Amino acid sequence: VSALKGAPWQFVNTKGEFETIKVKGHYRVNSGEMAGRAAVAGVGFAILSKQACQPYINDGRLIEVEFEQAAAPLQLFAVYSNRRFLPAKTRAFIDFVHQRLSAMPCAT
Image 1 (cartoon, rainbow, N blue to C red):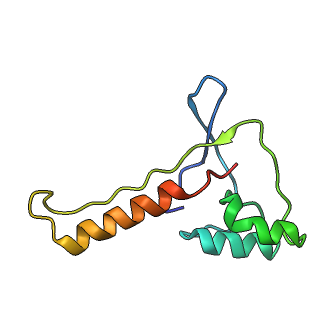
Image 2 (cartoon, rainbow, N blue to C red):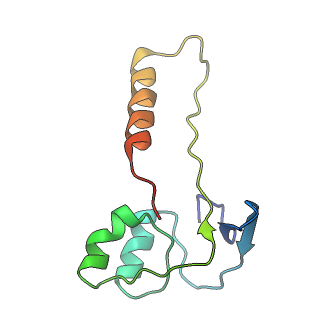
Image 3 (spheres, rainbow, N blue to C red):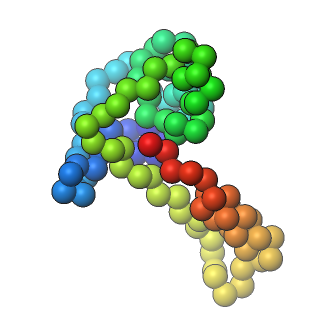
């Protein structure tokens, strides 16, 4: 919910355009971890990273559902007050996060 501000699920169609699907549900969370736990508990569907879910798929607690369209990518922003006077620890953190995310295999 927080990533999309409660908006419907977003997908990318064959033309590369964003499409939204309104989801009716009673359970909403602002955490991918909580969405994953709810899915494992059988509460419903969640769009999650395959990498994070693979152990649950392997042991049968989750079932991968293939969609006709790919889930829209989420964007991550680092917001800080001034690029010019950025503290070294903040720059190191941004570089670390960028490096780790760049090295991750894309979820399918």
